[in-house]
Amino acid sequence: MGKLSSMKASIEALATYKFPRKFETHVISMVDQKLQKRFEELGGNNFFGKILRKDKIAWYGELACICYNSHAKAVFEIHGAIYQKWVALGGTNWGIPNTDESPCWDGVGRYNHFNSDQATIMWSPQSGAQGIWGDIRRRWAELGWERSYLGYPTSDESNFPDGGRVNSFQKGGIYWWSDTGALDLNDVLLHYTGLVCLRETGEVSGADEPYVVMGVVSPFSTGSFRSRTYSSVDSDTSRPDLVEIYRGKPNGLILEITLMENDHGDPEKIRKDLQAALTAAHSAGTAALGFIPVVGGAIAAVVGPLIQKFIPNVASAVNNLLGLGDDKIGSERIVLTGKDLILLARRANNANYKNVVYKFSTNNLRGHNANYKIYFGLVPA
Image 1 (spheres, rainbow, N blue to C red):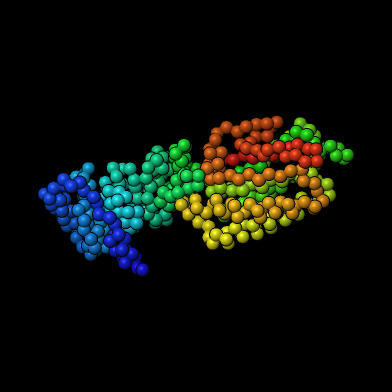
Image 2: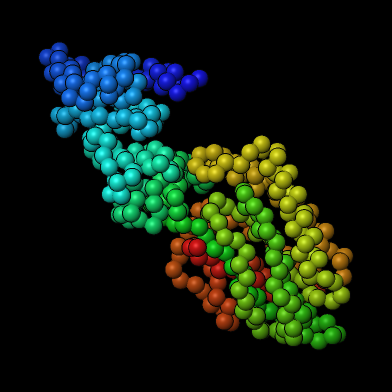
């Protein structure tokens, strides 16, 4: 279906604006007169193209629309890509314009405000026309609109995991939940920040020589990492460290942590084997779902099933690390939702235990008489 045919179908599908029964004939006539006057002022069919449909407050053309705003007692125009987006969102059922299409501060973008400045459709050549409203819109306005670090919106407001809502932007997103309000954030940065030995293994060889192998699975990528092998680790000591293990959108991830005691194995081979297994697990999960969307309502529907698809494969990959010459002290899987990532990244204060700075940690990892905890930091990227 061509753009014009699609536009006609969308306009025909719009429900007409519901006026109170007391709406008098002379008022309708007054609105018609205002619509007719504005139609002529804007250039008639040269501006609007063929008029496809008229209702009590709006005239819908092929290229543009005029709509009467009863609060402002004025007629406003919408055209081009913003008009197409407005029709797609529901037309007058979604919002009544209270501005004409107007230029943004940079002279590049364009916008219309709707519903007494409670909603906006914003357009730029790079981002297209996107709808933004409610608390997310208010937060974006507080930040400075398109002049903020976020730039222009690149999606309509959409569903997000854990019952949230989101608008994505050129340089981040604004996320909303009923218990948090609107939270702005760019990407997140996850680090491994070290370990603490609460009790060493007690091997005949003396102090421990542990290392940590980590796998990260997100909706769009996998990664495997390891710490260095720490020498002479005794009970009640720590090894602060800093290894970046994830940088990207806060769309949820699985973090698989395995603590090993170095005996005769090859830590790098174990990491590579884990990476191969994670890649296979990710491919199997995404293939089962068919596609992975980028943001919004589609990803809200897919992240949960995707993680469930990954978990058995990831668990199998970790089990296969056994028997490679080193002893596994313990392992843990941490599943972080998008909301978890955003709240942890935005939390200002880090905890500090034995000089290891962190936002969250594993539970106690116990094995071979040893007891360790592994720590992680999470900040805005």
